[in-house]
Amino acid sequence: MPDILERKRIINEIQIEVAEGRLTFGKAIRRLRRECTDLPQDVFAKVLKVSTRTLANLEADVGNPTIHSLTSVFRAFGLRLSIENTNPLINEDQLIARLNRRGHQVKTLGSGAI
Image (cartoon, rainbow, N blue to C red; front, side, top):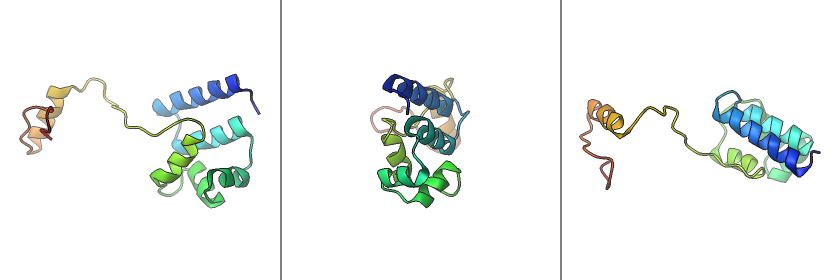
């Protein structure tokens, strides 16, 4: 098992790869388990309080995982799920225009306009 600095490096690397879209959640979970804990699936599943089948499905990117199961795994490594803007060029004016084209009458995003 890696020391704490190596573990932090691995987690950071995986986090970046997921954020850049180069690594799926499942592959990230598999790498986190193998590279940070070196635990077999059945033991790691018990630690997370999920079934071995759930963990295997998560790692294989199979099925439709629940937010709870994903959160359980990532929380064990000090990570959390979040929503990220994938289009850094979009601004408030562009978003308002897009919403208005779709039939919503939006003038501003402030003070509960949406």
